[in-house]
Image (cartoon, rainbow, N blue to C red; front, side):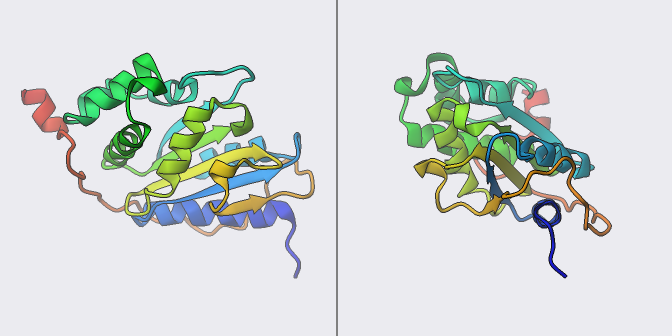
Length: 211
């Protein structure tokens, strides 16, 4: 039986979510022409992500600085309080002053540490739409994270119009060639999320309350 684009994409998305539920992170780039159905697939992923914490961002033409990164972490209560130093300071400077204020590699490491911490209580789904319109710094950091979250219960989905840029090349791709209105689920039952331990250096929530 030949599967349609929507069935293949739905199956890949379910695989990403089930992998995160089992404690293994993974990422994929949804690519295709404008209007082909990438946003619908992101919505499908969110609907299937029962028990996940979901963070979202969307690119808008003319964005500069680290607008996308700010949008992601505005959905987290006191994100810098989760991190120990120097990661809290590094990420704080980047979010406040922009990419030029700190080494991008250190920002990427601090971001990965924060995302891993957020996934300790329950799996994490990150969806980024219209990535071609995101500020370049956020795209770089998301690509950095996508290559380093394999040991955390995190699924990362990036929707990008064809052609994709060099920073996303080499990441797993779900290529849409036919328009879809609604993904067709070929998924089985969901599995329970397993526990996950904090990576260092991250403050425990209990420690933050008693500090």
